Image (cartoon, rainbow, N blue to C red; front, top):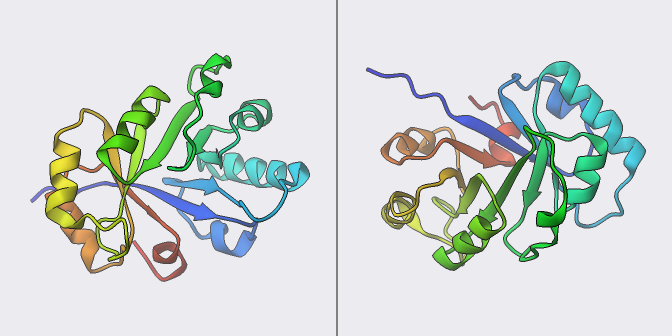
Length: 179
């Protein structure tokens, strides 16, 4: 039996050393805080901590600042439909990742040069709910890397083996005693 290794992405909105110090180095951190103005000093400390620990760190929705501060990449949420970042010069390993809820939004993320797309929602029954079968149809009809998002817990993580995702993302799954 094969052992599946998924990339993990943890969304945080504050620099809390207790939450991220226990994560393994294979967990990627996405800093997103849409409620407050970005504190450059605080996210620089967070970036330094993550780099020292070996975690990749992404900044949400601010490509220019992510490039300037030396983040590993940027996360473009589904509501970001801008193409202005395509005029910026990126470092070789700078990664653009984004989220989508439909085929139309996936096409936008492709045009934004996103290499990995977070597709929601696979398990959480909200307005973006796809379910396992529709999720598989969408991911199989595109040639991108996908990450599962929405309603994940330790029980349904095993169901991800049925899909062709490269990883999973969330908040609550990492706060609990997770994988």
